[in-house]
Length: 300
Image (cartoon, rainbow, N blue to C red; front, top):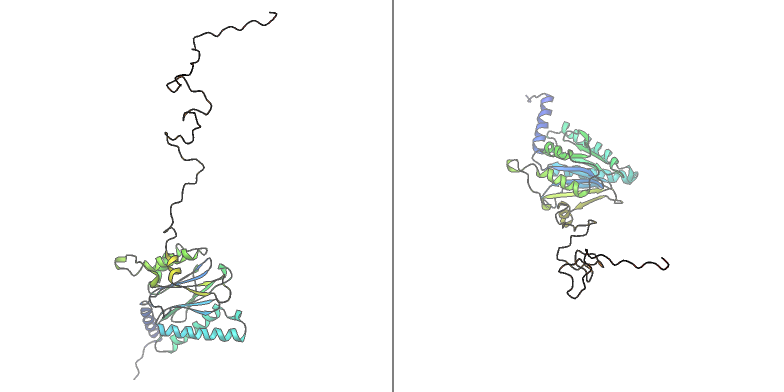
């Protein structure tokens, strides 16, 4: 006699199985910035990508079992190419692809004995930050939209998402957004709850650049990635003083004193009768000597 289990128990076991295996994968962060959508994944492999392109303005990111989400990505590319060729390239949207992925994952979760151990994200960049679209899909076909322009996937998504959402704004620059995502990824996974240090070699980074015509997806690697990860003031030198006040002149400096004048005496002023008076100079009349009376005017 075949073993019997209630449908609720079967679905519960499948969900627990998928969540446990997805939690073993490294996290991926997707967030919006002023120039588009940024993808950051902790991935040391240079060939097995967790972030890829689906179509002109649509990107794809995933965590979990590689062969399963790679099958989903390839199917999404074929669907997007077919729809764009049959109708128009503008008819290929992130929402349509997210719906197709949700139907596929839901069917596999219900009908197959083992669900897909994956969690994926479909993001589409718009002409303005308000038009960006992000969709997160789980192993059972559930779809939810990005909360505040941020999606975090993986086993420790909750602490990473809390750290990012408290500081994220849609007008961030690419460098600021990348450093924020890297800092959040490095805040988990270290021993004794200590933050780690993630280098460019440990990250996979790509963007959907809204200002780029045609295919907006591009990867950031090498020196460009290292420069973006560096703190903004790491190589800055202290700027010289630019105030309006002139620098103070030392007491013994005489380069600004007119010739023939003492440092504290204005040019052309007669010095007092002190030791600075030349020896051969005739001294002035003493203050106690009365002045000679003037002669009376004619006819007085």
